[in-house]
Amino acid sequence: MADKRSKEMAKIAVAALEEKKAKDVKILDISDISVLADYFIIASGTNQNQVHSMADEVAERLGRAGYPSGHVEGYRTANWILMDYHELIIHIFDEENRLFYDLERIWRDGTLVEKADLEA
Image 1: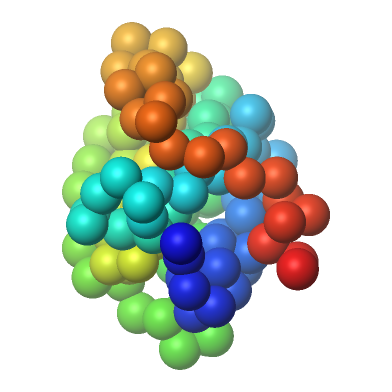
Image 2: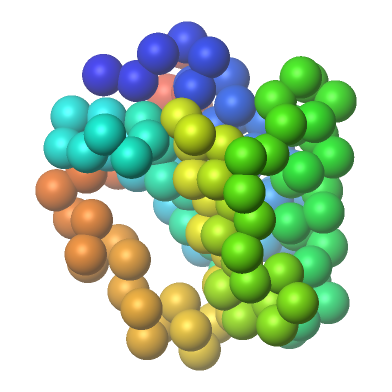
């Protein structure tokens, strides 16, 4: 089960993504099935500029809250940006690559978390 810190990080990241009009934001609790992280957040943007903007907003908000990013990949091309915060991994896709990689299917053993559950 995910801890309080990772839950707070996920809440901040989801708010940042929503601020930048992310599409189809999914929160997966993978803490019971993987040691990689507690949560995966998967979101889509409609174009490269929006994908960049979403990643920038997430980095800024989590950084201000005291959670510096461990590693970021794919920022230059912006078809799939992976942001690793250790307990939280954020995947921001363009729509085409999200369909192609279908992380929701690959990680279907994770538990889908509703945004309201992060508030609890």
